[in-house]
Amino acid sequence: MATRRDLVAALQRVVERDYVIYRQEDLRVYEYDGTIDKSTPHAVVLPGNAEEVAACVRVCREFGVPVTPRGAGTGLSGGAVPAERGVVIGTSRMRRILEIDTENRLAVVEPGVVNIQVSEAAARHGLFYAPDPSSQRACTIGGNVAENAGGPHCLSLGVTTNHVLGVQVVTASGELVWLGGRVPDALGYDLRGAFIGSEGTLGIATQVVVRLLPVPSTVRTMLAIFERIEDASRTVSAVIGAGIVPAALEMMDQTTMQAVEAGLACGYPPDAGAVLLVELDGPEAMVERDAGQAREACRGNGAREVREASDARERELLWRGRKGAIGALGQLAPNYYILDGVVPRSKLVETMIRVGEISQEYGLAVANVFHAGDGNLHPCILFDEREPGATTRVLEAGAAVMRACVDAGGALTGEHGVGFEKQRFMSWVYSDADLENMRLLREPFGNDGRFNPCKMLPTGTGCGEMAHQEHAMKAAGPEAYV
Image 1 (cartoon, one colour):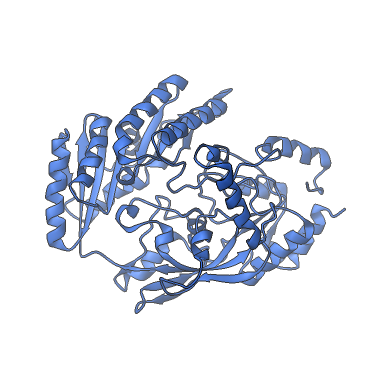
Image 2 (tube, rainbow, N blue to C red):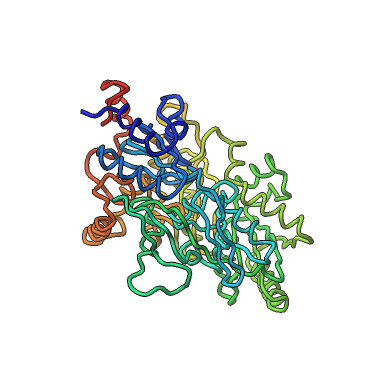
């Protein structure tokens, strides 16, 4: 029987020894992502190019061990957690911007390139990359592709799938292929589209061709202040109903603003019930017209004040507070559990009321910060994992929130993915036939069940038993793998 030592030695024949991690104390860094599930891998390998990625995948197939792809580990659904242990293949060393093509407005990047670095490189040419997750200073393009990441400015411009033209992929079988290319409309089936958002179950991206857009000529950012979150929620539909599609339309409640002001001091009113951050961009005349209509919609729905950023510094400060809001919650509690559900804009008010009821039912504080324009909610449940039973209660409350989103006619995820966290809820929105067809899609890519197992689709026994697997590993000894 092959041992973990044999597995490590085989991986070290593919990449330099320093890029294979196997000591228990070092593996702890790779046992979690941005959610609360944990599982320690048997080994981690950090290839430096596409050929090494392919070779590492083939080694894992030879040894019959599961593979978990990993980017920056900022994901929020357990997608990078090695649920069945095995080998984590990380892309953090592959971080080159290979090309900026200004004529065709595209860039070719490796998967380990940090999101914001694409826009920084393109800025000298008057271009930018649109998808901007709140973690954009840390998350990487490969992970964005895996999760079909969104961001505050995706309301009018679309999410990752709308801005990726092609992906070079190492499939779950170890083949190196291109899906899509450098033009918007490739012939045949859209395998590129199938791969984006597949959450590491079909393969690993090794190069990505992204679309670049011109930097808008005019940008205006407003902050509408409300006494009640219900009034702010109603305003969202009013703004869209007026025929305006803002670049961004974000909401924060009082709990979130108090955390932001305590940690970042960005000028949010901590006494208000909620605020809407409204950003408009485009030609100056259009932005001026839309700004006036947006102000009217805010005031008509009870805004006590509508402020406007007077310069780039004030705009940056407002966005610093919004994008740093989740991290700022550490000011209020040792732990938080961030959810990701979607509801129709017309159901925002009643859903926010239901989230408040769930908070009271479970005795857990909830901070709300979310992409209000497209109904993408992010209730953050605050807790202390050291309190006996707290984590179980939090997960139950989270399930109740997700059920409320589905009951409102919404979806299980807007941008964080299904991952390990929500795969048990998939039957709420998909039939058995739907789920079987999704599973069948994995087979042509070579996924026999061991490529990012326990992610996205409901599974049988074995998944969801991470703690049990930890105990089994300890009993088997450090050189065994299961």
